[in-house]
Image 1 (cartoon, helix red, strand yellow):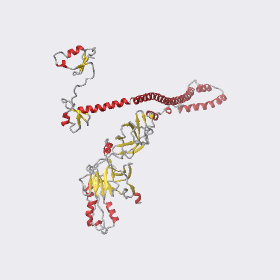
Image 2 (cartoon, helix red, strand yellow; image 1 turned 180 degrees about the vertical axis):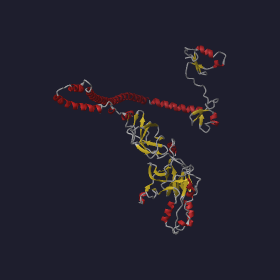
Image 3 (cartoon, rainbow, N blue to C red; image 1 turned 135 degrees about the vertical axis):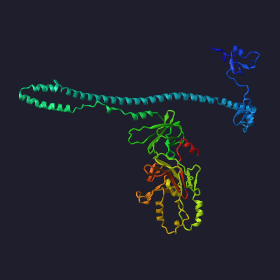
Image 4 (cartoon, rainbow, N blue to C red; image 1 turned 90 degrees about the vertical axis):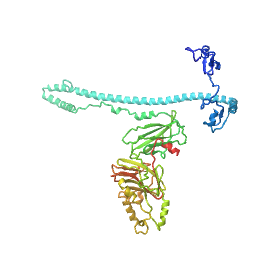
Length: 575
């Protein structure tokens, strides 16, 4: 149709290749008058294909394309090759590219023509698949309808049974109440028992009166007692007949197609973490991502709650960071995969526990008492390692028999004044001796001046001091609260409450350790941070500002636990 006619438009008779528009005869004469530049425009029959006569470079609008970039597979101009984005690319002339591409296209077309019989066979097969799909979908609809009809039938039976039970109970109660009404109506004047008693009082014969009044008196006494302790013969409420369908509603809300072809995901407990946030990670046994989307459900374990309410979140990947969990609580997690309307069964439920208190963030302090000759911090100040080798070898020239090496202390750069806080860290398995705990601000100076000098005669074997008494003195003189780790073991301090047998005070070293400081109660606890289980707890003086404290001896390393963030999995995947 003509692009310039007033409604209704006329059919076009020619199209202008320069204007990229179609015209009827009248409109063409108006817009292309004789003696003007537009009269020289090239026109063809009516068409919608307005190809430019000359291709111009999209990056250099005034330049024609005259080369072909073999790397980007697109036409370019000479400016693109000289100093543009294709300067280092391999290019060829447009005529060469035309010839090469035309030969390739011709060969491809010839190949498709030669495979015409194969294409027809595939079309026939696809037609059969179309019909088969139609039949199978109808069969699936019938089976689904039958399944729902069974549910309807079960519900109708349950509904009828519930209504019959309510009706039966109603009739029994009405009958009891009606009987009670009739009994009380008999107590009214001139009615029933009262009317009969009034007639008996009119009896003048003593013998007849006594004989009748004896039985009547018993009946009146019962009626009087009933009147004094009035109680309805039946309850009016039907609280016992309330149908609880909450669980059934939850089950029905999850009703969907189950397929054996969709793998059941499994929550990976090693990759999942509970720290400042919860990171829940899962995988499929076949290592293939067969589901389009996953649904993660979780709920807080509470013995007092009878019904369980699952919180639900949809996830496109295979991990999810949750930040709305309560401290010091256990949660159950499960996950299932969805592919369209088909879903997998639920995974096995995994129970994880949150930290006992909010997570406290800090870095190792590289200024206060930090010994850079013995300790080495990473640039982020999240890891510390003791370098026991070279300084010890230099000092060993002055030693003849044996010595105790030194404890190198390092503290956190942030203190705690009040409240309850938790932090976690990892101790390398090769660590010889590590002490961890807390130190008050007023004892930090004493802490860093309490280290042992390897050259001191006090610790030489021939100094005359008993090693056992020296250890006892050292433990009692500690200015901070610390527990000892090392050789893949966790050592419970020897206190009056601890077991007397030394072997029972030695536990396997957890892969991740945690410390919970409660300043308000004056308690510090040492945890297996993987299971959030307390291994040891003791009193601590929290009168001053409290700092996390660490001590390393020999070859050892401590790494602070990384906080869980929304990008946590991506960061570790890149590593």
